[in-house]
Image 1 (cartoon, rainbow, N blue to C red):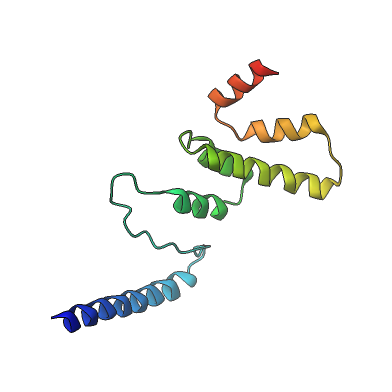
Image 2: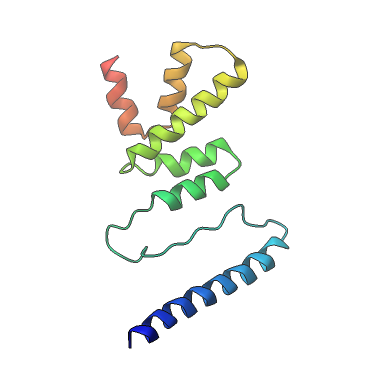
Length: 124
């Protein structure tokens, strides 16, 4: 019985790999092929961590404003808001090769949900 369970697990993993390879090869020929693939195991469970899905989705978007839209709607996931706001601010200042405190603050706050921006603006 134990051997059968091991064999079934290995067989299922092999089938999933073959299916994924087939799907990826078909999609790679499309006009707009996917930029990434993400396994979404256990996403049907209550309290599932959607962080990897949100990161993958955000990275796939070409426009900064679309990235802001995805991230800013995730008010419950403030870690992602902070991560992308800092990434974007650093990208800008690496290219411009200058540092301006007010511009950094503005750039970071631009990614935050409106409730966070309002709360932080009162503290200044």
